[in-house]
Every structure is written in C-alpha cells, then in structure tokens.
Length: 514
View 1: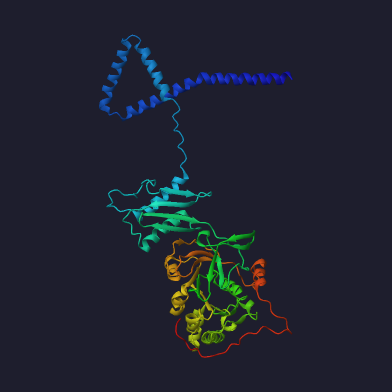
View 2: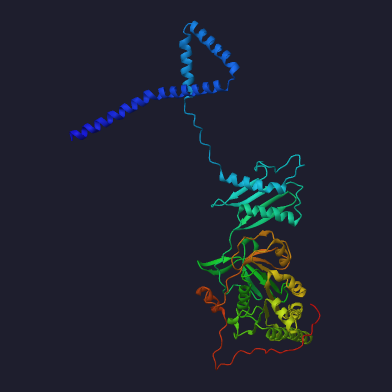
C-alpha cells in the first residue's frame, strides 16, 4: 500500500512539475519561435538584396544601433520592442477553419450555372444570368425534400427567352430535370406573361394496385389512378397495405360519349397488354368482347371460352374473320335501332348490349395480311370506329409507340381517348396524345405508368392496375389470383350455355359516318 501511495504521489508531482514547466516555457517558446521567424525574414531579405546595396544597408543598421546606444535606455527599449515583436510573430497563426458550404446553396448555384448558357445573352445590359453570378435574384423560391433533393423551384427568366417555342422549353426542362434527378417525374408550369417557370417534383403513383371490381357507373371503365388534383372523385381500392381511396382516370363510353374508342401506345414491356386485359375484365360483366392478338403471344388465352367472349384470335385468318363479323354486327345493330325508332318501340336487347373490340398490335396483322393478300384488319375497323358509338360498339387498339406512323389515319382520327405508357420523348408524347405534355417522365418508368388524355382535356398521369396473364408462372401468385377471380365462370358440362351470337362472315358495307 505504501509503495502504491508513493507511486501515485510521484506521478502527481511529475504532472505538477510538467504543468509548471509548460507555464514557464510557453512564453519562452513563443519568443524563440518569433525570433526564428525574424531571423528567417532577415536572411531572406539579405539574400534578395543586390550586392551593391548591402554596404549602405549595413551602414544604416550600424547608425541606428549607435543612436539607440547613445539614447538613455535605448538598448532596453530596443530589446523590449524586439521581444514584443518576436512574441507577436511567434503566436499560433493557423488559419481558422472555413465554414462548411451549404449544400442547398451549392445545388442551387449548380442549377443556375447550368441554365446560364440557355438564358443569357452577351448584349443584355442588365443580365439576370451571368457566368459566376448569384442565383438569388433568379430563384425567388425553392424547396428541398427530406432526402435533400430539389422538390420545387420557382425561377425568373429574361423576357427575350423564346418561351413559346417547344424546342427552347424542352432544353430548359431537360437541364432542370438533369440537375434535380432523373428518377422522378416533374411538372413544369410556364407563365409566359410573368416570365416565370415553376418546376414541381411529382410524388410516385401507387403501383401496388391489382385489377379488381371498381366502383363505376354504367358505361364507365377505370383506366387506372392519377394525382388527386386531376380527378373529380375517389374510389375505394384494395392495395397490398389494405383498403384505400384513390383518384381514378375514368373512361366513359356511353352512347352520348365523344370518346367511344381508345388508342393505347407504349414502349416495349410498358403494360399495354395489361391495360387491354384489365379493360376486358371490366367489360365482360356488362357486355361482349372480341379480342384479336396481333402479336400472337397467347397472352389472352385465359379469356378463351369464357362467357361473353365471342372470339380470341391470334392468326391473320381468324383476325380477319372476327373483324369482318364485328363490322357486320355494327351494321346490323344500326339497322335494328333504326327499325325500333321508326315503329316507336324499345330497341332490342342484342342491339344495345355493349360490344368491345380489343385489338393488340394491328400493325403486325396488317403486314401479314398484305403479304397473304387478305383484307387489312385496320381497314375492317373503319365501320366500328365511325358508327360504333351509336351501336354501343367500342374499339380499343394497342400498339407500340414506335409504330404510330403505321397506324391507319381512321384509327388515329376516331380514337380520341389516348393512353401512352412508358417514357416517351416530348415529340412522341405530343404526337401520341395530340397535345403537348407538360410533365417530364422519369428515366425509368415502372410497368403500367404513363399518361392519359380523354377528349380535349389536358394529359394526366396514369398508373394502370396490374392485370398479368394468370397462366404466366413468373408472375406473383397474388396478382394471378386477382385476375382469375374476375374471369367469368365457365358453365359445367351438361348445362345449357348462355346464348351467344355466332360469327357470320358477311361483306362489310360501310355506312355514312356518324
């Protein structure tokens, strides 16, 4: 115990002596460091002084030293001044750490620098955008999300910027999307009167919605869900996390609707076949369906033989026969409706029951039919497209976005309801939707994500409910079960099947356009 106590006391004494030495030697080391600094300065000054000036310099130093020696207390004052200057020069002059740059200001400055080449002109006397300029005058408001990404930006641009030209707008939108991140969709609001642009990052639409029984009225089909501000109502939906209410995109196809036909375009694997399958499942409880698969992939085999499904065709011969029957059926329905109006009676039920003609990839069928010398399937759609609204016949055509120019003009002119799935370019979106798209798509869009335009309304975002092929084993079981639950039940053998009109190959006689 005594030995430990002695060791502890010795350590305390050593620590006290060290602190005392540090207190004594601290100022001394400060003066020594300052004298070393003065010596280094004097040596550097002597080395850079020319040889012919060194003699006069030494004479001047000697004269000053002699003057100080003659004065009372001159050497003492000189020594005190030397020690004071050495203490000042020997202090710790490490530069203070610069404050960390604000990441928000850095990002905004990067956006400002990227926009400068497109919004600046050399002849502008008071430029708003200049190289190495400040972004505060050009960006009145901005917002960042919790992840530090730019969520909203309000910017001012010069009055001479050609904001009425689509190409000029597209360049600015592309720059903004690149700086804010291409993993999200953005909506751009151009205020041409006030020379302002507002960019807003859009939240992701829910992609965990499977096809189901939607709450819709007669003649209404739900294409998918959209943003709350782009729909006038909400409907209850079953999602993976439970039941929820979402704003739908409703396509109205009643006899008085101006958008009785739909054209769906998309990039490969964007979900156009899923859209057609979902529409067929919604239409079957209230009408009949004729389905033509131009790609011949067999993705609609689950509908074959189901009640209400007239035909599911994959070959050219069967497709031509089915579309010829659809054209003749449209003509027969119109004739039955005219007879009912003349006698003042109610129209027959078979003439008012909705009929849906779903055609997937008609361009491939047209090329095969042309090679075999058969009628063009797209030409056979002219009668249902032009006169189908009065006869409760609706046509849905799905095709690749790159094949838009090969679709017949009658299809493009009659199908006023438009859907584009995938990530189209601004030119492709305008050609497909018939109006400019003020939304910049993300670099990678999930399956079923796109845009819809019904009639003359503005395009809105769209997420199509998942309706995969239930025979595809690579699809999750819950998604396949959702589709299987909506398929009409096949009557057991031995029971009388539901009556269905037979396919009749009748010549197509186009009537007057409605």
